[in-house]
Length: 460
Figure 1: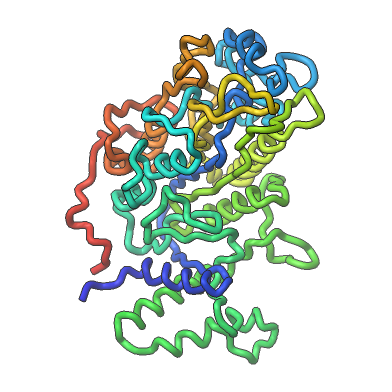
Figure 2 (figure 1 turned 180 degrees about the horizontal axis):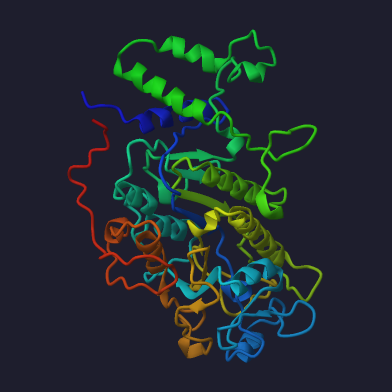
């Protein structure tokens, strides 16, 4: 009988807890130096790259942009004017509600990649595009595992790290589909095993004389069977994480809560809260290597708005993204440790929007968009990638921004230079011809594949 992977056992515990309506989780501590972490932020709904990173006030595409965009454009001057990006030759700027992101750009901690997306064949279906992008196999959906899962499988993880990856949300990100290394949780407060009548421990009950699940469950698994041994190890992992309080500090109601460093303010929304929880896990140095978090609301067919007007629906989304990422950077970079030197964030979306706005004050499904990279080891303050331009003959199907940077090229560079995993052709089947763009700092390793024949997923 093959041995059961302890991560799989913990995942089963989590699934049972979630089935009971209460979040379950699993984690064990890693030892050694500061762990490098990659955070993938997915803009669900297809972000309009021409509004997040519009042509600069004097950019060569500005006149064409203003011709295509009358009601939804980011203006060159006046109320809601574009924030020009230095080192872009005047060609690019940022939405005015992204001022916090622009400040990170100015401090060389944020890079922009233009003309980014999936290569042909093109799909304008959210479902298909998100699925194939997260599988890492553009145009192919019958894969069964996400690209981050294949990264984890090929990264030679130490057996002592129970959960190197978290997917923040109610369902697991497709990029981590098929991974037994991952926990899925809407928030850190769900990082518990409370799927039965007992509170987790006597501290929860408020009556020290009562025994909680933490004390009762070991009594159920006292034997030497494989299941019982693995169960005790699972409880050990859970109990090690018991001291973490994922809720915010409050002097009266939650004095043991989390206090973000550097005056960082994550706000009250779920996006900020999930980034805050990731920051806590990073600081805990518990072996976390991969985290995913979603921010939806980018499908702007109607009433996209404009920063020149009071109604600015797209700008509201931009500010949520900008403020959340800025708080994350501030929190993790404060102090002597500066965890952001070991954390890289990549922002990606499934496709962009049409160059020409529609009659409903919005933009329809397009093709190329932008990617963002943030971190202490990012060569920020620069705009990467070539750009075909907005002349009609340079647009894809005479309607969309062309993809000139394969999104896998950016992710592959992060894998190699930041996560020190050269197996990019295993993570991205069918991809070839990788060449670094220089977005991330780190060592270039020869890219290759991964022989998974003898990787059976079980611990011996």
